[in-house]
Amino acid sequence: MRSGATSLVMIISRMQNMRIEPAKSGDLSALLQLFAHLNADDPPLASDKASQIWRRLMEAEGTTVIVARAAQMLAASCTVTVVPNLTRGGRSYALVENVVTHADYRRRGLGRAVLDAAVQRAWDSDCYKVMLATGSRREETLRFYEAAGFDRGTKTFFEIKRR
Figure 1: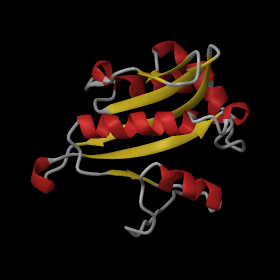
Figure 2: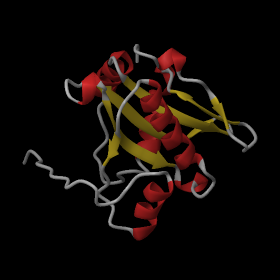
Figure 3: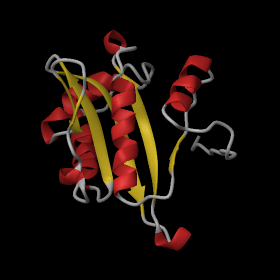
Figure 4: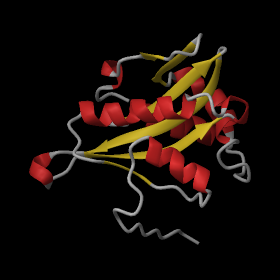
């Protein structure tokens, strides 16, 4: 997380003992536990493969894994990647992925806090837009993203998955 990760200003929430900040190299195990609340049916990663991927993520220029720490645990997270761009006057764009909040910490503003930090990271990098996609069809989830400032239905999203 070279590019700008250290310039990401730590955001202190109104919630006592809660911090929003870039993930640290030692956060892998806690992050993998948190991701079980995102995709419970995902098979567990072998530890050596997870470590290799984590190292690549931590070193990826323009990528920041943002976490919410509450009561000394990782309670929410998302990943933002700033992508260089040759259109829009050379202004980058950002992608947000893997927005997740631990089930015990939902409805406390933690998901919104990490999402807000990701969007701020994009604006600080002079991105002209921030995009995210969700596979959720739950109206509650869609309203969450709208409340965070994202517009529904402005683009048509397509996906292809390797079979």
